[in-house]
Structures are given as C-alpha cells and as structure tokens.
Image 1: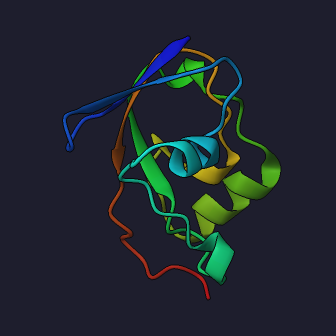
Image 2: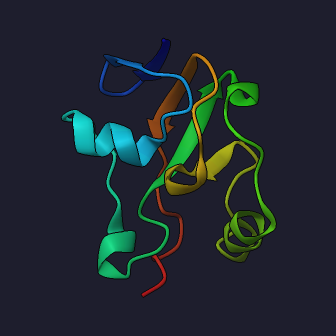
Length: 100
C-alpha cells in the first residue's frame, strides 16, 4: 500500500501497488480531472512535489506532449503514471490551453 498526497487539497489517499491515477479518480473523490475521456488532452497534468522516482518512467509520447505545452520538468500527465510508491503531487496549472 502506498500514500498519494495532494498538497493543495491537504488530502491523502491509500492506494494499492501498481494502481494508476485514473484508478484513483474512479475509486475516490480525488481532485484530479481527466479530460482525455472528452478529448481534452492535458487536463490531468500534475506537478510532482516529492518522490517522482515512485512513478513509472515517462514514455516518449508523454514527453513529446509535455514538451509541446512547455511543461515544467516536474510535471507529468496523470493518465500516464503508474504509482510505484509514496508520492506527493499537486494539480498543475495549464500554462497553455489543453489540446482539443
């Protein structure tokens, strides 16, 4: 079991090994948003505040997309992350409009 902390919301959720943020969204009342179900890629951008090594490695498609929206180095797409340990995140500001 791992802890996912949402810094701005002061919320902590306990998740099972290898769960994803999308599973968290479906299972709990989490502050994450997933617009990919509605064609709004990028709405699930998160900022990893602690323990980024506890998320699955970034694949090339995620990296290309984040580069295209000038994301910060510690930002990820929650839909692409598998949770591998305790992690603290925050919901990232878009900085750019999501891709429709």
